[in-house]
Image 1: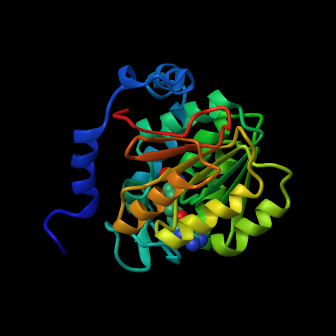
Image 2: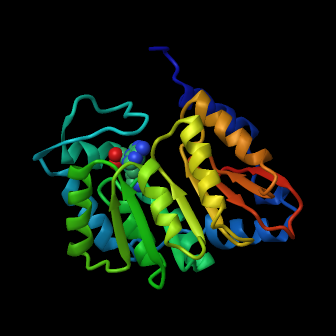
Image 3: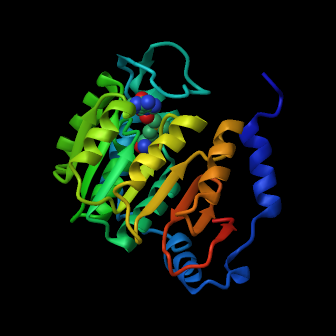
Length: 262
Ligand SMILES: C[S@@+](CC[C@H](N)C(=O)[O-])C[C@H]1O[C@@H](n2cnc3c(N)ncnc32)[C@H](O)[C@@H]1O
């Protein structure tokens, strides 16, 4: 194992190169930064979800995990404590809040999430976009069952959970949709699968669809996937926040890539 891992190197490089909203001339991106990405969320807004996260972190019971993705850098073995998963595999509060603000801002009617885990980001999306139908996909049956219980607990009835590999479930989910307004891809962080899921989603995307990719700097393969997504013919604006890569297809925008510190 190298002393400095890929994400650590990428993090320093991001901070050295990233700018802030003052260098941004696109009104669309400037507005997004000023009104959505930077604006703090009131702690009370997602208090119920955070209370649930807190409870999950304290759980000592174990589940048998089926790992279908690129694995975890923190957890080893098939049998894992729910508390360990909650402490290491989920988006931290501030990033989940930012994801929720994006969903709330664009008011998507249909959201696809790849990578449910225990359902924390799904619950953020469900609360931030109450009129949306959220299709979330989780490959590990035992993890999916915990997520399902969490959705019932918080009475999130705008979520549909699909259990199975993304490779099988995503084409099925997309086939049943007229259009896709938002996609959040947080699982199977490897180059080819990420590009494959992006291309599949594009078939149901439209001018105002927003894509959010997690962990774009997780590995060399993810760096390569992100670089290819940026140059894709249908992609116009991208925003690299380090923890998220946001992608827009808006034809009215000039092709431009932003790297920001928020
Ligand atoms: C990082 S976790 C998702 C965290 C969640 N979005 C959150 O922050 O609350 C990624 C999840 O994707 C699932 N996953 C990874 N690769 C998969 C694949 N190819 N098919 C189905 N599920 C997969 C894993 O089982 C894991 O639970």
